[in-house]
Length: 226
Image (cartoon, rainbow, N blue to C red; front, side, top):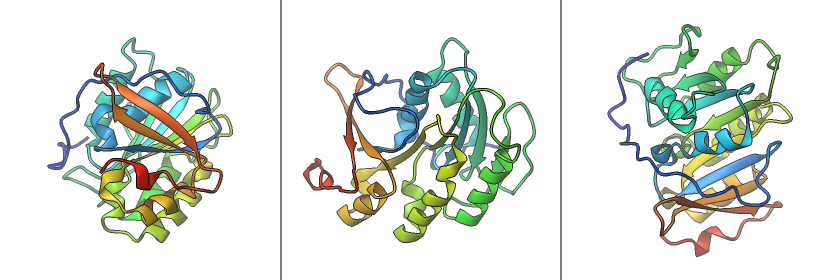
C-alpha cells in the first residue's frame, strides 16, 4: 500500500452508542454526520455489531489511504476477530489501477470522482461471486469528496449500480458529511437508501445514533443543525 493522502484526517477514538431500532442487515443506509464519517471509523464500528468474523467487507476510501482504512477496521475489532476485507483506495498519493494482491486486497483508482474505475475496482474485489461463508457488506466511508467533483445524479446512479454488490443478508453503509451538502443533494441521496443514520457527538463522549427510515420521503435534513 502507499503513503497516506494529504487530505487524511486524524482519527479519534469515539465509540458509537447502541444500535438504534430499525437499523438492520439487508438494507442500504446513509450514515450522515457533521464531520468526515471516516474520522471515527463509524462504518466499521457499525459493521462490527451488525456482522461477524465470517463476513466480508468491501470498503471504498476517499479521505484516508488503504493502510489507514485497514487500521480503522482493526480498531473497530479490538479482539482481532475482523472479517475479510477488500479496499478500493481513491486517496493514496501513488495511485494506479492494480490487481488485488497481498493480505488485504487493495485496488487503487486515480481519484474519488473517477466513478468508472471505482465500479471496476469493486467488481474486481467481488469477482469470485458471493463469499463461501457469511455475508458481504459494502462500505463507502465518505461520499463527500465524490460529490465535490461529480454531479449528484451521476453519483446516485452509481450507488444504485453498486448496491447489488452486497449479499442479501449484508448491509450497505454510505457515509456523508451532511454539513457540506444542500438539502436537494441530501434528498437525492436519501432516495437511494432505506434509511438515514444520523451521527452526532453525545454528552458522554460517545457518538449518538438516530435512525430514520426514508420510505421514499426525506424532510429531516432542513431541521438538522448547520
